[in-house]
Length: 119
Length: 108
Image 1 (cartoon, each protein chain N blue to C red):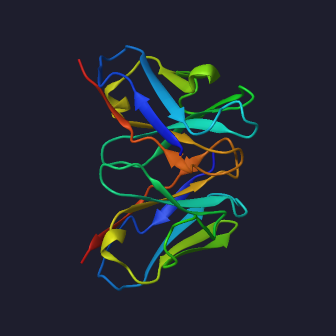
Image 2: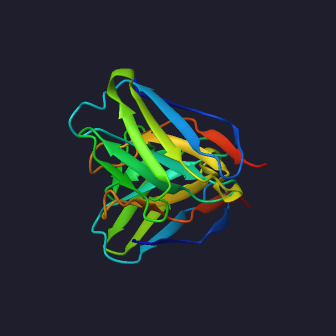
Image 3: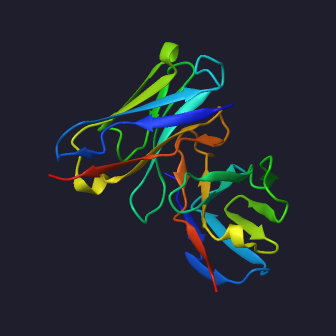
């Protein structure tokens, strides 16, 4: 059974760095073809893809946010970590992690974690 | 980046109605398109991938079609549990992934 769960702070201040952790089970990121991605959704708005890391430790980022994002993995812990620097109130959103087999689609999602950026 | 434009952004329909949602890509994406359903407070759920392949467990009243730049999601007979927001997503430019703006389906 595949599950993913996001964890991290519910509230961050402007200019701070956000660190989110995705802990998953039921698959391994050392398996060829396996990838995990982060997606966010501001309240009442559409989904926005942020970053992806694959089994080979290749990393890919949204063009508009790549200067602020870092994605990494700890295969032994079944975790993927996303950091986003210089947080702003417009970054307030629910952040999801999701599994995406290579060249495929988001087939399993976490429940999401709401991050509010406010002083 | 490839842009996806969904229409309509909102539609009001009744149980039993046939519903069609369109997703247009800013450039050709072959059949590299998926559709997701999202209910309030929940994560999106994959419905259709590769433009027309039904994900396992998804009711057959859902269908997808199209290729290139124009795609459609059809619900043949709208059920109460289908009232939700629907998103298209492309991965032709993988891993540069993009989502459409969403279509909210509400009860008339």
